[in-house]
Length: 183
Image (cartoon, rainbow, N blue to C red; front, side, top):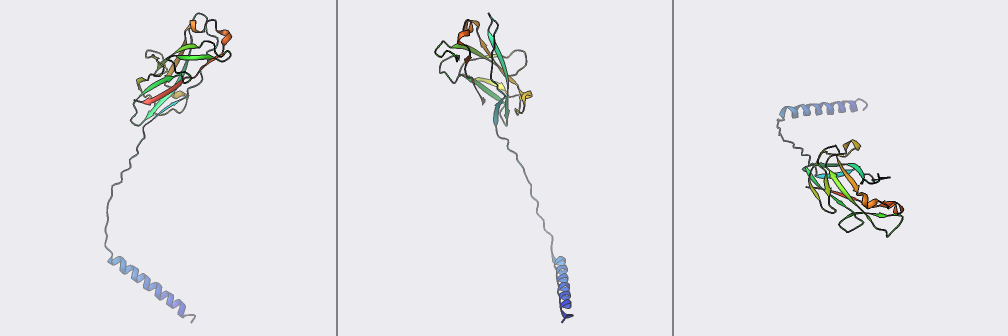
């Protein structure tokens, strides 16, 4: 019996090899081809980033108090243009307003907002009206990754008569809501 088991295994293995080679000889070849299409759908999106608080410290007497703030607007997909709207969320009035933090109830200080679709020098500055979109601004970036991507700016301007002799009511604070939408 010791010799029978190895012979049986050898016979079964040889039969398996013979069956496998017979199957290979009888097989036919068939093939099919397919086309693979990969479509990466880029979603339309718009982004605004790097808008920092605006501080105007010790303006020059007799001149408007001003400050600039550069930021980034980016869009992807089919977004080529955008509109931008500046709103003072603390008021419903037709003005941009700052309120006295130290003397509540004192008269507000009205200010103006100017927008430019790039942060470089030159023409293109538009005066913003509260709650009215400024349309037709071209997208100049596909992402807002860091401060070097800043491609737009706004300027806050407070006419001298608005802030003259108001030191006792200082500081004045307010919020400016900036909304960008695809055109």
